[in-house]
Length: 187
Image (cartoon, rainbow, N blue to C red; front, top):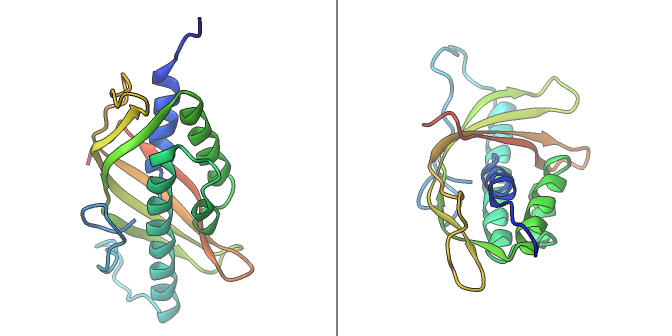
């Protein structure tokens, strides 16, 4: 008989699915169109390059969350959209987590809501990065067994902080390379 450890792989799947992470504000049905928020303590205005980087990073983050939601519906670690918006080490972590869910017969259903903001832009670093903070609402985003749609025990979601880093790669693409769900920090 096989023993299931839903808490461990459920936590991993939640982290991967909401790590950063990667989407626009609203009802979770698509990317947001709103401008990113800036820290109130930053008196300077962002340059045109910084604004462009912010927008590109938020598009990559929106794409990451959308691709992650799509891949999670079927627990498909090879979903083609993942590689369009994610880079390692986050890409590998998300794929491993999706594969674990697939092997346990679980998929994601429902809606994940997101409200991302840019917290910093570092264009003078090698490689350039943009840090994103998000308040993810996973209260209606459930991990269920595909066979009978029962909720996986211990997989309940809530509202919590998530962070992600978008990195500009040499080919000019902004990809989400790191992300973390801070489930102990409600928002």
